[in-house]
Length: 358
Image (cartoon, rainbow, N blue to C red):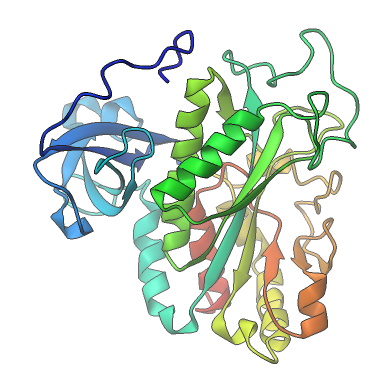
């Protein structure tokens, strides 16, 4: 579908010979959105090493000036393309400055270095990505009354029915497209605010968490395009008595996942308590300003100014799942990351605190 009156694009069934289309994507200057463009490759790709470097005009993405505009992109991961299909691929890239140093917006570089240092601890992550659907203007939540508000929160979470659910076709399309692409999507559900949804990616080890989450976001935006709907990752898209949107991050190391792991979980939480400010600054691109609208102590959040933890406590900074508390091992959940976070920055900050003592 091309999004124009529901018409199928009549040219996409044309054979493309032995060539493939590779969609190169990178994080732009906002550190919370992807840009991308396509190039033709002469053969099917079987490894990242086969993918050539490329570049883009950074002056159009808030990543350079017009006088020195080229920013280099280097492929780091690739996935099957659920839109073009066949042997065509989606390519996640790193950004580099003219002197070949990591671009200031390239959080993946440092994250990958630290993941390599602590790889023997086998850090696993699972991220719960919340988002809100808006109509084509990007101003009105999808399916909300034209003048006014829907009924108060309560019946929408994991709801069923046209009076409670808006946008399910987008959600189902996104889920299937992620599975096709090879993204480690683990589940999805309707959220507390109407037109707000969540999906989960993971468990992913090390740097894979950021790669898979960013590609899942791209796929979500592309699926929504087909329905003329806008995806918002704003942490508090609607002010007032409505839930915000987070990127709750589930965390464990090998020691935490084994018998006696609760000792290691509590030790990590203690380390987090001493780095609360550093984590808040890393958990949204505005260094906490966006998240301050969400982390108020209300609507299933902790206060941004105070670090807390508890078993099965969704109003705490850190939640220990009840089953993990019973078993004495497992994982814990950091509920502070905002929905518009850079997962490379988030997971990097976590391993620096938890694994590297920084």
